[in-house]
Length: 191
Image (tube, rainbow, N blue to C red; front, side, top):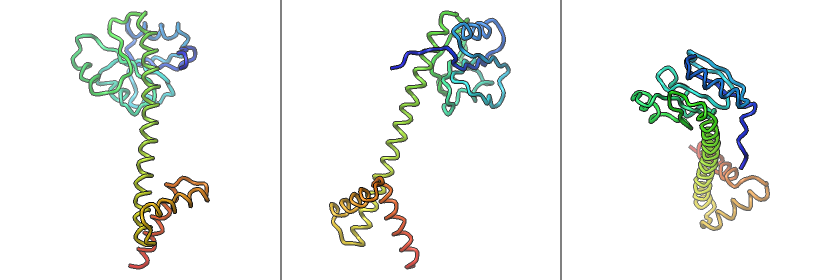
């Protein structure tokens, strides 16, 4: 596991330039982060920030979108019911309560950074698993085609696909896709 190093971390602070906003920006700068402080937030922040420290309210809802790639630290007032609803409905990786305690900034940057990194790893694994599942479905479909057209039994159909994949040095899913596409092409010409 890599140690968190805030030096050079690109941080976007989306918070009014009040006492809390200035505390957030100053603390991030003291930690060695490259800080940009924007308020009011633009419709599309268009930033390469690795971490966003963001007031949680309607004007920043678009930044809380889970599709964002940056880690997000939400900033909320303890009694703000609307902010709590936004927190429940959106993805933030850590939360700082108002009034901002300067000592809480580093802790929350670490938590947000680690949570975002963990989330990216999980999303990557999910993507790979989805691809594996798609490939398995294609292999099953290709086996059915081979069983019907070539009168193979199931183990023979799989062995045929696997042998072809090894000979061509491609994943078995690619061979299965080729079998399916050629079958569809031949079926289309026959009709």
